[in-house]
Length: 567
Image 1 (cartoon, rainbow, N blue to C red):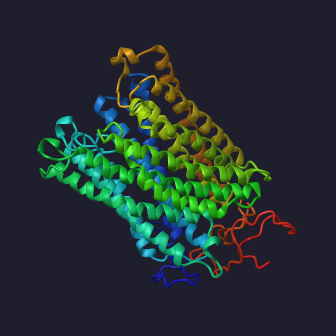
Image 2 (cartoon, rainbow, N blue to C red; image 1 turned 90 degrees about the horizontal axis):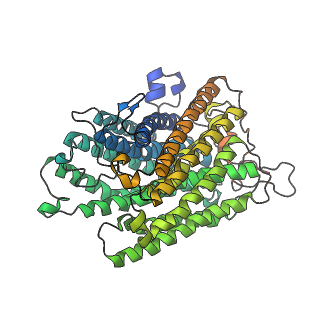
Image 3 (cartoon, rainbow, N blue to C red; image 1 turned 135 degrees about the vertical axis):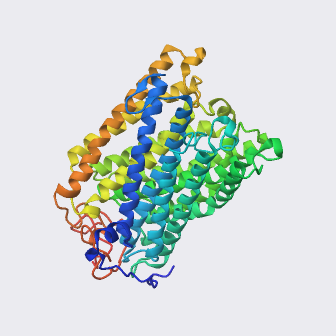
């Protein structure tokens, strides 16, 4: 953890701007180019995941209709759509964008080094990730169709062909997830090693920007939790293809074992993607409130505590799986406990905003909406953390709405906040603020119109795995059907606003006003590099003199104080 730089792998393509197109854009070892590869791949996968959501929501609201662009949704296709929508948005959108893209782009720039410690390993991590995405997409087209047994891959749905699930599609799905995990293990090694050993001269541990800390902690959580699931995935593939019975109760196996292995990873995974988003919000609110981050060390210690507690809550997903009620009581307590540090971080952010000189730029709007929407997700999670309430609410649309109120702020709002904030540094141009705000309001208002009604239909008893509610007269009440239709129309509205972002992104990338080095008057080191930074980042690596959040310091003429400014 010394501040002296470590010896890097040979950066044999520092002059790769003169290299050919293929090498420059597909085989670069520049951390910024690799970040762009992760980001645009994640965005492409988000288009697939969003299309899947459109198709199955149309089926739910208007059963049996010919969905434009898809056709009539059969029962098995419905299961395939919801399975792969969930998997794509978690594993192939949130993780590559929030951790890999922002981690790759920001860590070297924010700690003042020229690249990742292992640049070739970094390139390999993206190539493996891309392979995993291609395997997943290939699974859609195998004979019999892709995997349709839910993104959690519970046996026996993931192992029994008699349930209408093709063994090849199921196996490819599991292999795709496993290959992706290998990519993020390699990336995590790079992130932790670079942040701890390659900081600029003068940068102490408590001078590291919060987003870097959050990505490092998330990487450690991922590396600590993924091992049992990888082992379980190997056992699942053997059950699917080689006649073993690890999860087959008719031959001595235990399907609940898979649930333990999956959720031991799955719940820390929530914080693996949450923490980078929390870090992005910290960078934004300090800049646009012109205030020092309130209780920096408290936030940092709280993040570590959240990571530790995240390994102790997994079985709240299994309250109706037949686990011992005494164990359920323990996990109820740990689940309620973990809400405390997360709430503390959010209230620290509110304290940072209090009394600040707030500017409502597009990045700031996204950051504020993250705090508001994630608080709703946290409050509704308390109901599901209590085993008695969860028995009634489990697998209803209440759970789905709660999950989206936690995951949408992380994966979507956090991503939009980060892109709109660092876009000037990434591409050297400014995005259009008016288009940015139109996209923001259309997305956030429509999101709430989608999922607030689903809390209501969930409490009314609607189960989230039902393909056609007209087959269940007790659930086919007009009021509930009207809410389902309203939620689906709201989804169509939200999707209609996304081309505005894409147009703003790509048009601004080439035609937007040129950005200065530091358009937001921010303190952190990345804003001292050219926009966009060249390979190597700086002609001479910077030196750090203070922490990252020295805003509105009494006695200074300027209301910001860059980390690399001597005085």
